[in-house]
Length: 254
Image 1 (tube, rainbow, N blue to C red):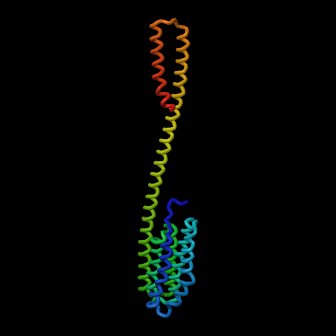
Image 2 (image 1 turned 180 degrees about the vertical axis):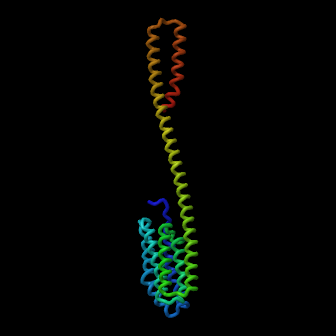
């Protein structure tokens, strides 16, 4: 798994389909009767792929392929603007150039493509659009405006996307380091507690054996010692001392 993979939300895919459908009300006033040609392109390429991506998002393993799917959606949307501009004349250029910028924004910001994917795709789309403008023999002033808009807008988006991804990567890396440190501290504490428990068990076992040995030796010594008041006092003191030692051992064992 990559260290940073932005989630591709189902809402974003659905929004992309709705935005493309909303262009129905924008294309007609701008392109007139030619809007039908553009709609045929969209209905045969970018919209079906966007709908398919939306349906795929319901699959439980979609997270493993969300980046390639998002890349396909962005690429086809970008190619749609370039191919549509190629079908019309240079006068429609300034209508399709902002559309290309919108596609770049969609890939960078909304779909959350990783920078390596998004930068490559947006660069390809911008290059294809510029080649389209060159093929249309676009007037120099119009070409300059289109070039300025494409380069400046996508450049700003690219820098912003790079900073956003680096920030997210840094935050995730920091979070992973904190989790790793907490896990290490928990493991260290668990090892320390286990060591202390083993030590306590060992000490109980050893002390219990020593107390048993001392009591046995005391019993044997008492049997072979003549009875007198002074000896009895010493033996009672020794037995009392053993009881004091044995009492915490029995409490710890319980």
